[in-house]
Image (cartoon, rainbow, N blue to C red; front, top):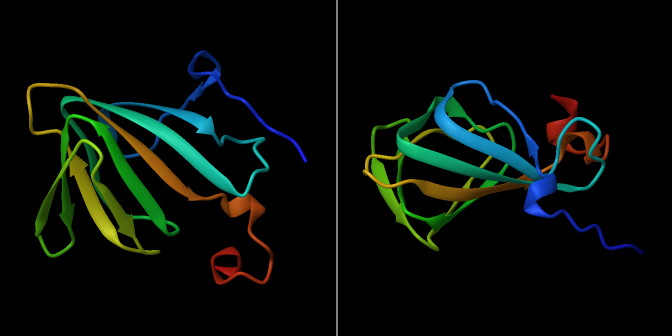
Length: 125
């Protein structure tokens, strides 16, 4: 048994494809990460966005500060305020945008594909 502590100062920056005006860091994740769950903290500047694309695995969003607009593939919009969450199932297409004049921060939580058992459907695709 162990406890892994990751101070925010030790978080790893990364640049996901299709994100503009977003500054994400892995609190738990990255290339060498072996844990079962990844957690990223994404800071969206005003006008910052993640383009419409499908999520690779089930994904949880938790808005910490500010307001973000989530749009699904059908064009329906969902406004998420501080402490609102959303669950997206594998393959769900979505975009995320900060339409306000204030920054917004969101946790993105998902299984680590590298840690999935080989029998899991996501690991076989």
